[in-house]
Amino acid sequence: MKSRNTFGIHFVLRIPKQQKNGMATVYARITVNGRRSEISLKKKVAPKEWDDAKGRAKGKREEIVKLNSHIERVRTLIADGYHELIQQRKTVTVDAVKSLFLGEAEETMTLRMLVDYHNRETVHKLVHGTMKNYHTTQRYIEKFLKEKYRRNDIALSELNYRFIMDFEGYLQKHQPKDHHKPLNNNGIMKHIERFRKMVNMAIMMDWLAKDPFAKYKLHFDKVERGHLTQQELDILADKTFSIERLQSVLDMFLFSCYTGLAYIDLVNLTPENIVKGIDGGDWLVTHRQKTETVVKVPLLPQASALIMKYQDHPKASNGGTLFPVISNQRMNGYLKEIADICEITKTLTFHIARHTFATTVTLSNGVPIESVSKMLGHTSIRTTQIYAKVVEHKLSEDMQNLRERMAAAR
Image (cartoon, rainbow, N blue to C red):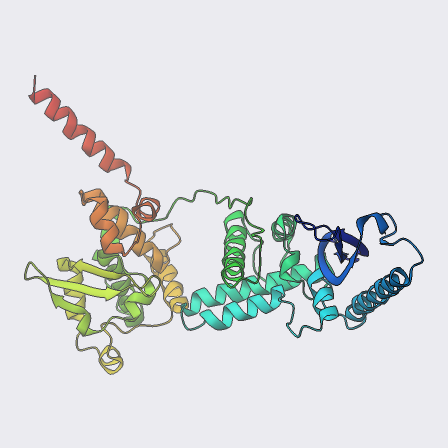
């Protein structure tokens, strides 16, 4: 892709496989920025009367002179359309030039039009946090177009592998002017992943014939998922605060440690989500907002006790929720304060509770990964394997059990 357009018009013959009267049809071949398209002039000429190099008919017969005059009129009209697009600062593509000549009213689909369409269509399907991420990706795409190509928009037909690689390079070098840190590799990959999902929508809608991502591979770095050890979890479980805001945040965090709920799913909990399970005990039944999958978790005694603790809380009762919920940002702010007081050096965020449930509470205590995956609401065990690594003491315990069985068998 180039910031300065290249343009050409040449006239060629198309000889049908089953020739009739030895005549061939004249086509105008338009080339813009290396991409070409052809338009039939619906005029025929004998191949022997055609000059390939000059792109015109040979001879002085009246019909030959008329054909060449028509060819020049078509050349002028196509060129005028090309220059009109430039003067109007519209996106210049071979499809746009062709459509203008043919008088087609269809508007050329552009990247910014695609992004706008995607965000309008998915705003009611995706959660607020996910949509916020798409809008951030949109801003990066717009900055990239202005800073790299000095353009406000491009046609979808111009997207190619080089564009993707240029976008990745731009994100790697981008230096934020505000308080945000530069993007790490996984942050860059998430933006490109969202960009690819939008491009896939264009392919599904038949707005894009060729997938520019066909040869591109996302390359995420493996990240160790933070979680609390059993000792750290015990410290928090035994801690009592006289300050209500800290105690309620701690209790909600602990509830997630014992159930594996994400923040948004805890926020949405109501008393109706607690039902009697197949075993006669209390179960938590809800839908994950992120994936809309059903989550069923038999409640541990610690989780049941926390529900009882807040069943008459004024804020929870008035809101119809199980807990006196606050924003995720405030929750994480208070969790940092709690970590400092409890002398836990890890950066405490609400999502660490979910990882703790997967790793320390369930897998480390022998709960099969298939069961953990169901309780987390994952659609694939591969996702659970990323979240829930088996900690070292569980490996040690398993091997010790093996040693004892082998010794007993002698």
